[in-house]
Image (cartoon, rainbow, N blue to C red):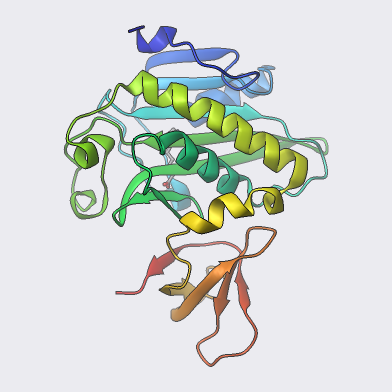
Length: 258
Ligand code: BTN
């Protein structure tokens, strides 16, 4: 078995080149700095641990174990293409890469991977524009080997070790994820979310469920609605409380109703 830092994997462009760190603040920050310095499309940064791992909406991402995956990829999509659903495409790739171990992994819109209702992995995409061309850092964390979760995560998070009874090799997991992620990203860049919607929806944790959602995209109270599925551009379609045509949720957070 090769060392994690010397891992080989079968991709054409994703993970080439790769930079590995024993410890970093955030792989997303390092990837953005490397992108500014000219790293090519597909370059990735990995770390054994992060001291300032970040999640969506300003949350922290627990990153101390040395047994999990912390990965950030630099991608440069063509200018002018819609990128709002990029995180959904990343979710499709991660789910397909993890399916060999955990085929029942579900996608919780927008960016979480769940097993048995508990969070296994999260995705954080951050972009900047160079003229009209986007430069995006696609970050993801997968709980592979950790057994314990701090504080409130004890009730809501899981790991591959917890689900399988033993931790798989972290390198084997990454070597499975990268080709699947490369394929999902290539399909998304070529055809938008519509091209991979059929690979997302069967695994959508919210479809048909009662969910709590902030219908004013961040400004208002939560409403209980029923999730119907996804639009071709990746928006979550929900049935309004009083009936009527489906409404679109384009950003923010969604919770399964208790
Ligand atoms: C979320 O679920 O809120 C997203 C979590 C994303 C965590 C990953 S770990 C690798 C990369 N570096 C970071 O600081 N965050 C992402």
